[in-house]
Image 1 (tube, rainbow, N blue to C red):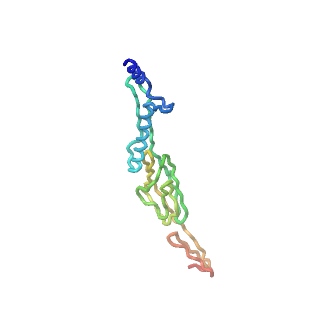
Image 2: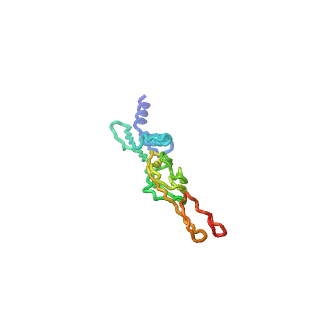
Image 3: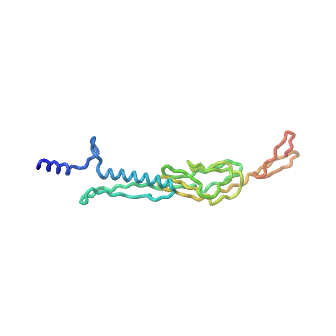
Length: 194
C-alpha cells in the first residue's frame, strides 16, 4: 500500500507536461492561450458576419495554482482603419480612380449610404472607386465601410465631378461648343457639322 501511495504522490508532483516530448501535454497556460485564440477567432468571424464589433481587445491571466502566478497572455484583434484622404475632382467623360489606404486583415468594403456619381463603382475587395463619370455635380455623404477581422471602420467622402467641355470648328470657321450633357456634333466628310 505504501508503494502505491508513493507512486501516486510522485505522479501528482510531476508537472502536467512541457510540450516537448511525444505524448507530452502542453502546459495548462498554453492550452488556455490556444483556447483564447480560438474564441477570439470565432468572435471576430461572428462580428464580421453581423457587422457588429463586440470584442476588440482582451487579456487572459492563467494561474494554475493560487500560490504561484504565471505570465499573462493576451490576444489583440485590432479594428481596420480606412482613409480616402481628400478625393481629387473628377471630370465627366474622363477615367477616374480613387484608392484608399487601409489596415486590417481580411478587409472587405461596402457602400453604406449616399450615391456614387453615375459611371463610378466601388470594388468590394479593394475599396477602389473607379470608372468614367457621366454627369457633373457634387456628390456628398458617400459612406464607405471597411469590415475586417477586428471590426469595422467607416469614412464619409464627397466627390465633385466637373463638366467636360468640347469645342468643334465647323465648316466656314463657325465654332460650336457644349458640355458632356450635350454630345459633340459629328463632322461629316464634306466638312460640315451636324
